[in-house]
Length: 399
Image (cartoon, rainbow, N blue to C red; front, side, top):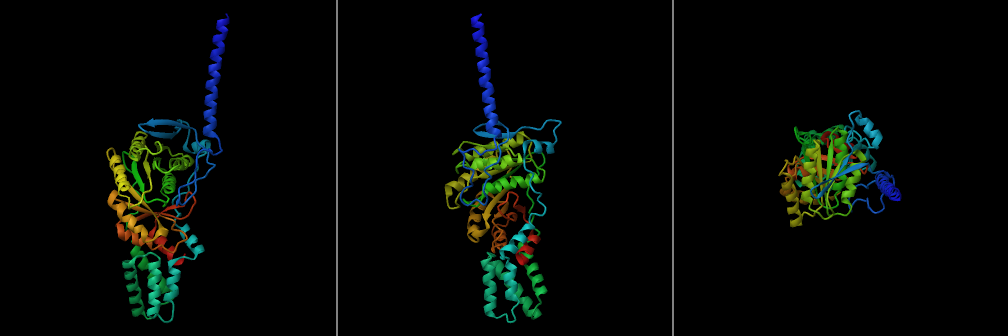
């Protein structure tokens, strides 16, 4: 009889241990307090900070080869998407429509619109050689580039010679039409993220400090606002806390994240991210890559490898090059090298708000032959906007 008692006590003890482990895991995944062992701050140069109080959602951890896949719990048949948001606390991103309009208000506050300086110069009673030199300097300082500056100068000079002394309204209209032609509103700026029968694959690349991880997180929010299902791939395996930073962005909107060990093979993580998105029949896989200097041949070769490995199972539909608008013409040198290695399909310009260097949009499009597709308008989580040529020209003329 005593042996039976001991057996019962042992079973109870094991049961209590199991219950304790389960409760401890739930405590760790649902606690609102940040985990002290992790640095959520972005790397040097990132254009946003990661919210440190973001709650971790309850997750299933699935090991795919060397990568760790984090997937939110699926909906039940009776559970609607809006119920999921309410239960799990996912954020609902702002709609993409109207985001670009914010740029005008921010440029107006910064008093950095290109048009303000040009109109002031063109409105002078005497447009002598010195004034035309100032106009040229204004355009070059706005990072318009040498060739576009010459083209715009020629149009302005011709108009003044033909019309004598144009009115302010005529000058505004002339600037608007000339700049719009240079920006080229006819370029296809849509994101190729709706592919029939498989997930679209988006590769995010760029040099150190341009805010790629932050941009990747914001892009996920933009796509989710467009009712797409998104998976994030943390292929930046070298920067400390890069994967955790991306995980936090994913947790906020319910996007699963595929990640690997620190210092692991980024190509393996990218491959697993795409295969996981395919298996889950998601709409889009967005792959964040490590920042690399364009002068480092080995790192650039590695980026090419990441793309080739992905293409063993799926085409790469978008390669988005993230450039810092404040770096101006220096960014064009970086852009050339990246375009040679991974065939860039579009540009994301971060930190475009509050800068007089809006002409970089024209310069980078001329240099690469690809459109600016997205622009960063601030530090908020939904301050990434699809680029609109007309709205942009209005912003840099009027602010």
